[in-house]
Length: 96
Image (tube, rainbow, N blue to C red; front, side, top):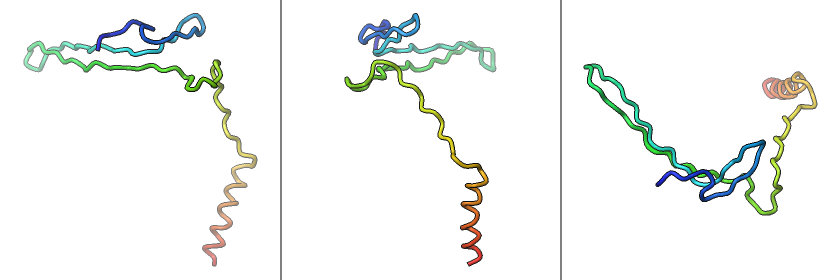
């Protein structure tokens, strides 16, 4: 695979003064040179990494804007309510 330029085979979306490019990208191998225990020069290389960036919008009916994250689930009662709700039946089963 040959490294592609940003947006070469995909689309671009403006977002706060910069663009998010969709498409296929390749991160080339990284070569690290080092000196071994006996003083000899060595090198090791990573593998190339292929990445495909897709748009969040999966269906044509989806909204064009970014959706908010859902708020956390809040319990309507205190911890002690649920603690006793579970503890009481367990005590009844243990006593029975």
